[in-house]
Amino acid sequence: MLGAFVLAAVECTSWLFLVFQQEGTKPVSMSESIYQPHTYIGYTLRPGARDESYFDGYLAINSAGYRGPELMRGKDRVRIVCLGGSTTFSIRVGNDTTYPRLLEQKLRETYGSDEIEVVNAGVGAYTSAESLANLAFRVLGLQPDVLIVYHAVNDVHPRVTPGFQADHSHYRKAMESRDDWLTALQRFSGFARVLNRSRMKSMHVRHMTTHVKFEDIPPDDQLANFRRTDSSAFERNIESMIALAKARNVDVVLSTFTYSKENLRDTEFLSYEAYSEGIAQHDDVMKRLASRHGLPLVDVAARFPDERTELYSGSVHLVSAGTEIKAQIFHDELVASHVLEKHLQRPSSSGSGNTDSPPSDSRRAGRGGESRH
Image (cartoon, rainbow, N blue to C red):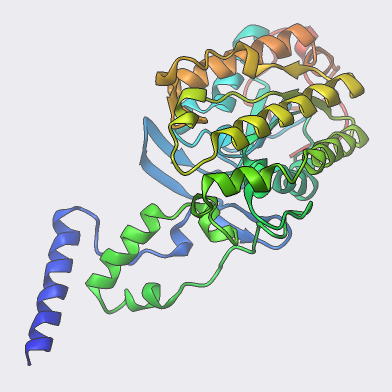
């Protein structure tokens, strides 16, 4: 009898908590996550996912499964696609202040054309392996003109994990697509809803897609594991992206990586030595491949004021003031390298229509060739 009374009291308290905390009483599940399983890539963003209150704005995933507005249609637009992890996704800011979105605005202003489109193809916790698969299976279908690759830190994670395999199979696992018992119990229990909401809020997508949480690996072991590896797998993945892009006549822009050394040094569960050495090695790969293939290199690591810790949320993610600076750095290099000119000056064919607005002048009249979507 006492047990039933306690159970009823817990349930009543849970329902009242949900109401007064304005959490709502609807059950939450993996189907409401911004992520979804993908057969070959592991996971992608869920088309149509939306969060109206997200840091300094909102979060919206378009119908094609990329963060940002719906993709432009028609022949005349010039499409730039940004590949990367959460630092490309810009996980600590709203949609209007992600670095790809700000880059688009800056390029449109500089070139006087609304037909420049920058697609944010960043996904939280992606390593270069996922971005390579993302490029092959999804991004090339967008028929981009320019590809920007921004990777470094996430490829340190598999290197600090024991039993390193170059294909990251020791690190990555398939994303769970089925709800568990706690999620099922939400249909009947307010207490289960409270527990599951708390779990979902604290669960990073990396925890759902990796065998081991690197936070659970002691920093000394992280460093030892890291130093048993090298950057060859990362280099292979980036070079494969370059080859795939070149085969489709897509221009590639590589980049180095910015992070707050002070904030990383203060992160207790990470090995500062492993991560600082790993990022430096991966930056060297980007520089080497840019030189080898004659590609533009955006040296964000050299140009970003990383000593300004207020620009960061944590060690690698940027707040909106930081994404503004980052977008400006990319803008300046794209303009200086003249990588967009040949696409902006390509003559349009008759009846090409369907862009958001007409070109600003005849030099930037758009594109010819087949219709692209």
